[in-house]
Length: 152
Image (cartoon, rainbow, N blue to C red; front, side):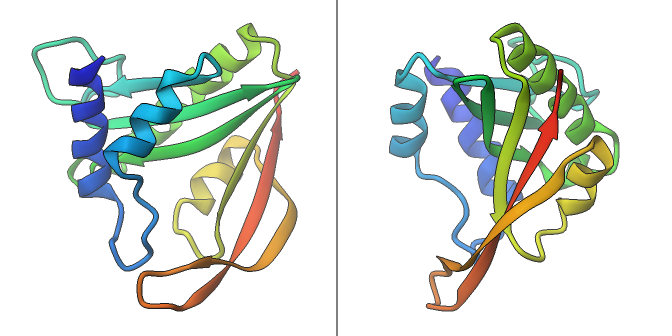
């Protein structure tokens, strides 16, 4: 699993703009994955499940709860964007979450995140917001928006 954490960290480093402070550090990723309720998947540049010997181009991490699965992180390396990898990761998430008994997916992101169009196109809809929830490394406060997607 250490190799997969390395791959997750590499994609996250390339994908998340440090201005927003959204990337997790290695310890956060390792701690989350140590719990049996967290899941992840990696895809290669073609959008298929990653196998050793190539480059990981994207990943997601999620957490299972009672009849829900929360998408914690989803990232695609910028050089592989606009190829359907995000959609492929969401399809994998939905299939796995459904198999774990989830009836809906949840996610939270900062308002204005360009990934919103991906999520809305997949069937996510807004269910709430948290005013000034996030704080950037520069101290700016940003709203969070919570989304859900029914899967059953």
